[in-house]
Length: 467
Image 1 (tube, rainbow, N blue to C red):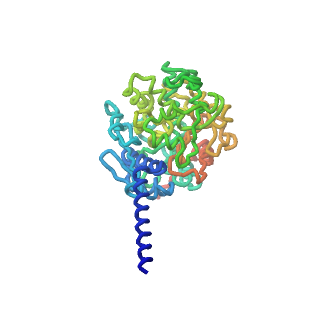
Image 2: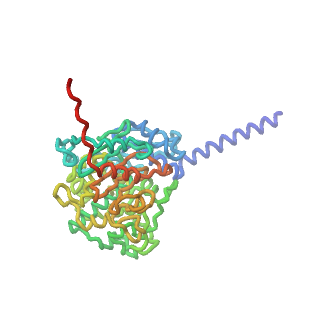
Image 3: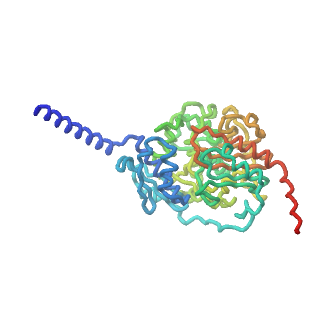
């Protein structure tokens, strides 16, 4: 019995040593999956708190843990004055995101919080006060809502699970909008890949300014090989030919770029070619990050680059709420990280649907407007020539969805969408938290709204006679 007791004691000791050793190894060398889980959590919660004005615990539960990877259920967070830190099991693989006024939050993959803080606007952004003018020139929505459109926005099947903000614009005016509990017309929400379309518009503005051209090549000094043949047009059409993996696995190129790399543009620039530029369509977030970097490089310095989106675009069309976030080095995360209210996303959609015209001011160049709504042959008709989708989320043509052939989209992860139909003067914004596994498609909602808003409102019932 003594021998058995000794053996058991040794086994227990061995288990304790192995366990502590494994925990120590994980602490010092956390797997990349652990780091991504924490960096994603810290970043989403940081932006949701400091930009959207939500509660950290609510975001952790509803946005991070409920729909996410199983690892995320074991994330805990701590909030500081300008920082959110996330850890697994309370101590593993700590990752932080830091808030900067006017620039939102940025991850600090190497733990250098001061480097993130150093990327700041030299002066606070000038945000115009709330205006009494009618939307979209101001912030007043006085037009009576279209009751049929409102009814469609109340249909759970049409709006899909997790819808948080819906805005319908017909003939330049908001005719219906709806918000989930806890959200309203003043809540900035993440557009995810709808950001790509905004980045394309910013690049078009620099083309208009003469800073570069559609066929500009040799975009970065590191590209001394065949990558020097990548043009602005190739970036806009997602035909760079760079080898980028966007499978959205635990750790692929896009998650690594967004959450483990302090310099997102450098990470993408260093990728080799897998195809000749212009010959292969491949949708990648890194492509839009490179375009954002190319835009910033045309400006005088980092301060001018950081101020450019608001000066050149957001302020001109009244996107007061827009917050374009950067990486640790100050490059705009042009593929995914722009926050704005539903009404401000609708302003951007209206600008595109109106051919780049804003109240008589041709803000966006006509050649860009032609490209942003025109299907790319290389993409098989799914994508346009300027960072927008010609197909809906189901990869169908406009004709297959039953929408007019001039319809085009800005689409984003987790169910974000702006449908733009110039011929019908219709823009439909849908924001929310709807994981792709739920297979939600916004096209039926847009089609129903198209039918409802194309007809005149019914005449009101006569008032009953007074006794």
